[in-house]
Image (cartoon, rainbow, N blue to C red):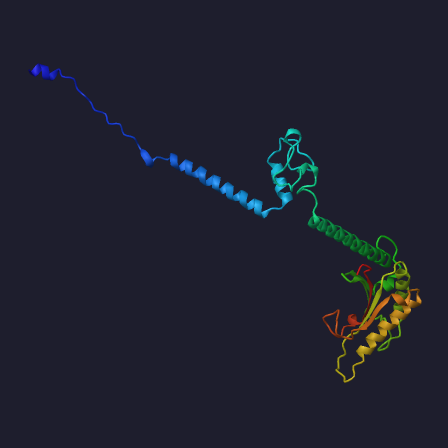
Length: 281
């Protein structure tokens, strides 16, 4: 009896455990991620269709079929892949008369671009003329039309309005006799040279006179009449050098209201500005 019990077989039960079974597994997460990705791609497609132009959509479509021989006009492929494009308008896209063809709006944009390019070319030509005048006057790349003494009184600058030639007093040498509009030899030389240089072009010309401030305020300040008279004198000298009077656009006296130096009484403020206006304005 005891021996039989000792020889009985030993039975071991093994319980199979399924980890994360049922809905606790991770497979559903992969499927959900694929679904979300597909939905995002769908909404991106809807957004692109609404936010892009016909030609942009055509370019995007061509980009995703790089292995096909693309027709120059058509949004589809060549040969057996030719035919209607889903973005064409009633006709075959490869005919060039569908959505890829220029419509009225595209033609207007093309015309506007052509006009802008023409305006830019005209502006560049106008600036080139002014730069040539400046080069001749100051002797850049060659000999100046002005003497070395006269060059001390002249500076130039290109602005949106044109080429501004500023002629000013320097210490010990004035452009006009004291408190008058009678020009000195320096002013006469500069005006005659400007007249000869301006004869190279036909741009309009503006004259502006400026004076320094007076140390004492008087009831009838002479600076207004003085600045205007000096501008008129320079105009007459330049016209006498061969410039047609019809080219004169304006003559203005600014008195001491537009200073070139921070010191209102500095002689640097005694100046004449002759502007060769741009021809494209």
